Length: 66
Image (cartoon, rainbow, N blue to C red; front, side, top):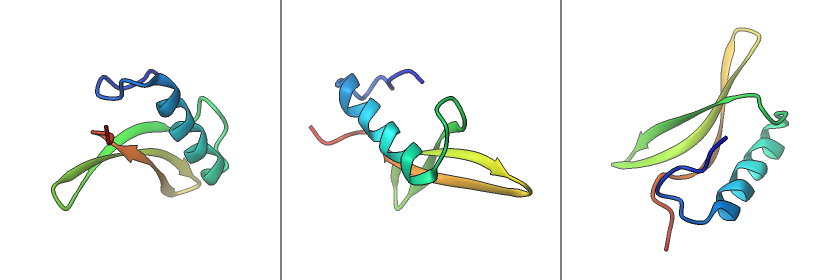
């Protein structure tokens, strides 16, 4: 999965994505990166399907802290 434009540090993005996959017990290559708007701020989540349910795991903010 490519690093989003607003994440200048590729290593930080890769680490955030790896942590999210580990928490979700999701193999690399599975899941779709989506954004959710919560309280006026956008966040990245991984989403995937397990049986009839859609699951999601937080990855990080769309605009990371500088």
